[in-house]
Length: 103
Image (cartoon, rainbow, N blue to C red):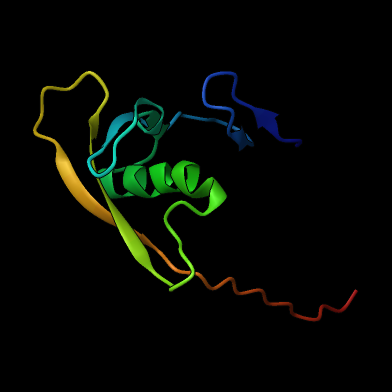
């Protein structure tokens, strides 16, 4: 069976697919409009981490000194539930690994 791509969330999947819920995010420090976005994740913590992937695309969270953090808040899109606040951190290091396989 080959992979399919969801037209809504763009995730690749095999078999049955349910999109992850949408979360709205707001950057609380040094906020600009472009930093607020909706993301798809299973839970609030995952939404905060997904926001960081977009925001940190150009190293905005990471700096030359190592690890820094940003504060954001998230909640389910369209919900009136209270916002959940997260400090999102990233480290400067990138780790790669390889493991030999027998063919």
